[in-house]
Length: 82
Image (cartoon, rainbow, N blue to C red):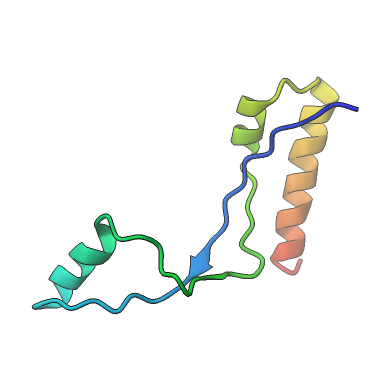
């Protein structure tokens, strides 16, 4: 059975509590080398697969490439409630 590499992206939600002189300084801290919030939670339904990333990481037949495109489009429609 063939193996495929499927790169995925997902979102998490968390909060930072930072000490700063002002909001811009607080944002500088957050956007700096701050580790991810320890209490982060997965944002439901945020798992995402990019068709280009899959194609770059696999050698797909023409049929597989068509199936990938069709399947990902359908998953997006379903996620949007269509």
